Image 1 (cartoon, rainbow, N blue to C red):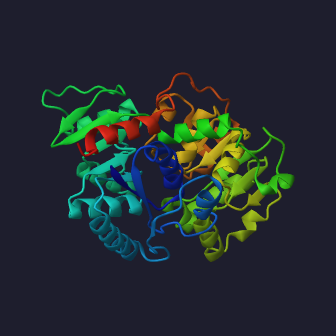
Image 2 (tube, one colour):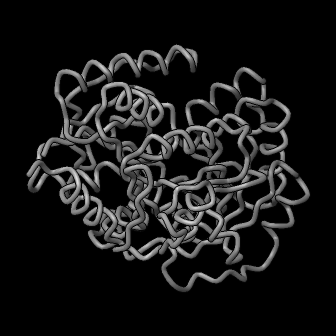
Length: 376
């Protein structure tokens, strides 16, 4: 079987790395990097230091306006698919790379598999929500990370003939030739491997970091926060007035906006410990040793949950609703009062159970791709 895997952003590199280890044991994989994250700190570190296979194709789509970037990705992916003729295309998450891969697979008539299918935050104006919905609609097989994700698809009409649907990892639901499977979260696989193999390590800036448990960890990168001066300034002002050390690995996009908006003074505040973007293993170390985490990242919300660290999310909604329902994650938007209250509140979350699977999602995905797409 020949599998074409499309990646373009940091979280996708991590997820694809785990699935690649499973599928490459018995099958051929073509790894295509769209170039969406072209900063070395955001992408190259995974290919050079984390065991992720080097890309077979690189589409230089970075540093362009969103529409032009998407068009370059689509054209490049379509050409690769037509040349390589894979049995299935695998896309991850909800980025422009995901959408480009889905559209190119549809155009070339190649079955599409979507990892992290069924996620919904309920805010259709968000580009990520639109990408999730469209990618799920185009997919032949939908790999869901949770039972709630399965139910989200059911609500949208992606159910079997009698309306029954189970979230169990071995159950499938067919609709218009599609298959829904709850396999769990691939990111849980990656975190388990990091911790079990002893790869979790502090970043190179460790000499400047506060002691474990004596800092807050903050990340900001989403367009709704980073690209709006009013929201970004409220978030940064809140961080420096918390009265605690805040470790802040600054995303390149956010650093660019901080400079454009003349907000650099916040980074010089004595409470702020500003460091370069951290590699995956380093980021897990930072999450694991933080007192609380303040973020707008979906991936970091889950990592906080897995590591049992209280999370404060700088959004009004989240696709990882289980973390909020359990009290492990609180949504504060960019409201300064809510941020301060959440940082000061006692941690009372329920971290029991495994709502995102057992840490074997990569193996299940590999097995099911072979079952449904391996030529007989």
